[in-house]
Length: 383
Image 1 (cartoon, rainbow, N blue to C red):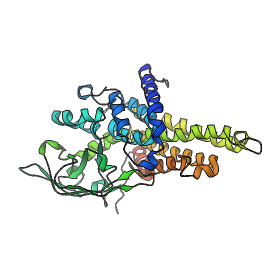
Image 2: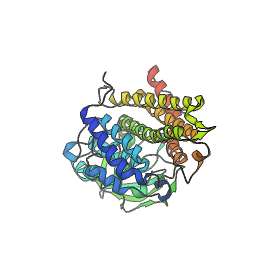
Image 3: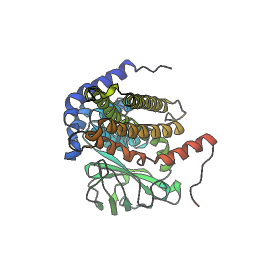
């Protein structure tokens, strides 16, 4: 068991750190006020080949292991949290699904622009009555001579107003086996986006309304069995979200170490006080532990080449809860300044990671999924 990065992985991390800290970090914390998509950052990452790190070489990627993608996402988020958020979708989002399951035409049209940082994408899955109960989704797809007509409502849909296309999960037939997936372009007739709304970390989200929206038949990814494929491939995306929140938590940790050494009270640095020392140590222990679990989950040797379901759920829970803990402790170490909206970014970092205890599956449902894998049977959640 080798815990060291390979030369290629270290080169990737060093490249992102160099570019990220020089070009992204100086403006990173302004994002909490400006609320803009860092398109220049994403294009820069595309030029460097970072966004296509796990995508096939035939379609503009590098074809490297999922672990390399997670290493990239964590360091991008460490340089700029908002860029890291969008990098998750570029590296391990719809383009990955299309590269894995799409037709050659779909791969050629949609994957290279994402790898190049020229195209934004998002997954549209949940509905008002289909959150954790994903198989209750009702957005209807009907195949006609003209193409595929969609009718329904999706909420929330991430920063949909900034995406060029969406991978939308819809119903072609009854039951879980009747759920399929369709690639929907932003300018599709019959698709309406709501005014952007905001999560607690100021990240945007929208509602998507499909009113007889007509999608070309060539954009249908699955007409059924999409949930089974999604639940397999989604283990990668939830690990990617874990890498992103760890990168953000690392910012809070590093700022806390520096502050504990520079801030003086009672004539001495606050790092001299044992309770502050204990906080720093606990933050370090949890960051290291969560990162090791995440890397173990993404590297697990399974028959389908995807992360183990129990390990990926464990990594999702551990990374998010660690990130919330670290950001919260960072605010405590900084005292009043840790709560300031205008001077320190710490309260924003906390608000940015906290929604991920719900997004991508709640921590509670992931614990239930882990237990199901341990005992070897599914638990019914319906009455």
